[in-house]
Length: 112
Image (tube, rainbow, N blue to C red; front, side, top):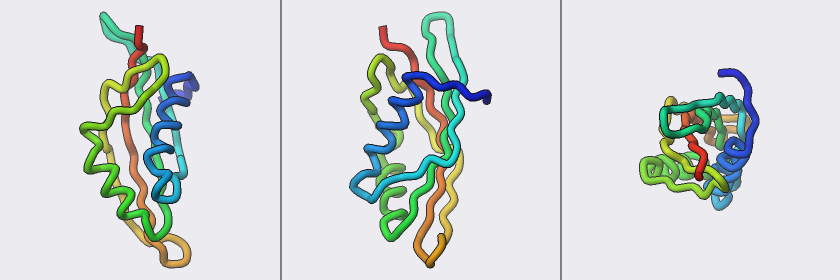
């Protein structure tokens, strides 16, 4: 994917960040977006690698993934049409604390 920064990307990252606030936050390791269009819609496809660290990393990942199919994020001017988990890696980070990496793919379409 070639890099593309737009309002949908920013809105999606803000929504994802808000999903993890109660667990201590999230780090975005890689973000790529590209334009997408169908006959009736225009938008963007996003691939995001995020990382959770700390004692609540496993709980945060489990809670997030259990609701992923029903996830509804408010994205100003855009609609989250689809979001899916591409990969997940659970390991031990520095200091022996849990670490979870997830690669997500999302499709946003322009609203209106």
